[in-house]
Length: 217
Ligand code: G3P
Image 1 (cartoon, rainbow, N blue to C red):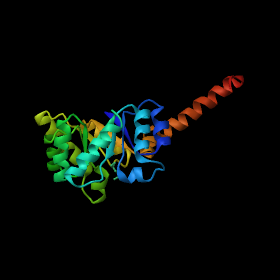
Image 2: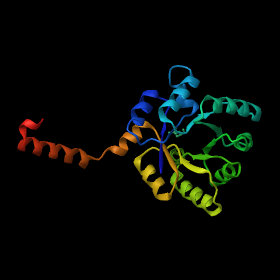
Image 3: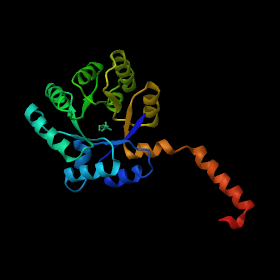
């Protein structure tokens, strides 16, 4: 399973990419609006850092505007992916841009039926928001299971990008279900590293070593 960072923060992206386990980045208008500087320049910098797919979202809700913005976003860098909302216009623009060879990530997906439309429109990625479904008392990960099964039935090539991940259980369940990608905020990626037994175990190893070889430090 690929791991993406869900952030527009250059420092966080740089620090995590330096570890060598990051495959891409997703942004949205909320995330980019938090960052200083020109958002297009920031997206270009993110592409240079990650050297993998970077999603940038359109703001327009009209087909013509989505196409115009989609072309602008795609022209920023070869790694850019155009993020479009799951609306009628979004699906129409997804089909048109995908037919031109531009990669599209269909976002704000909350049902299996919507995910089916995104695949039929040639989306490269589909982004179901699991955390926001959990927030309203629906099981977000159940939706991932449905989409993975549905895409497998017909060999759709659209990759399932699990978005709105809130905790390590979302990530592990996504991997168990065979989702292609999980996008996580930096704080969640930090959580994936942590286990109290790793911390206490390492402390003990180092203490025992220091006792035996006091000069080695
Ligand atoms: O980028 C889309 C998604 O990951 C947003 O997550 O936490 O705002 O629901 P969240």
